[in-house]
Image 1 (cartoon, rainbow, N blue to C red):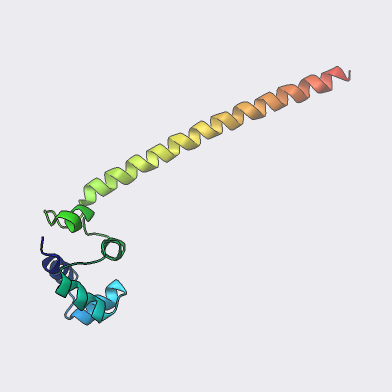
Image 2: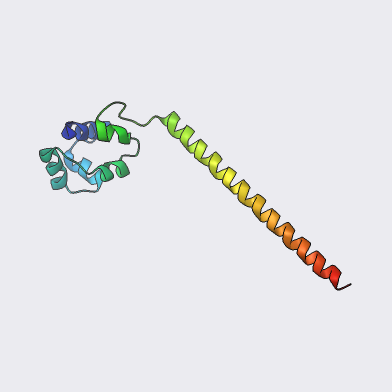
Length: 114
């Protein structure tokens, strides 16, 4: 896989006119970017972190699509939100049960004083 071509596609996608501009975006030095091209390598973490709309599978394989599917991201985030809401609901039910048990205990304690 030609990683230099991947770097060039990303640069083109973001409309950078120069490698120096692209390097600033990636928060690396132009020398590091030049080394990546020369060595046919790159730091996956840097690209993954800075290029949020680039599909990480494309970074590893070079196989299309290059961009994340926004509908899939929305579905995944929706699924994640639903999962978090279900977990919160379960925790609230547990808390409600514990509160009710404490109320019952205190009620019995108060009744024992009468």
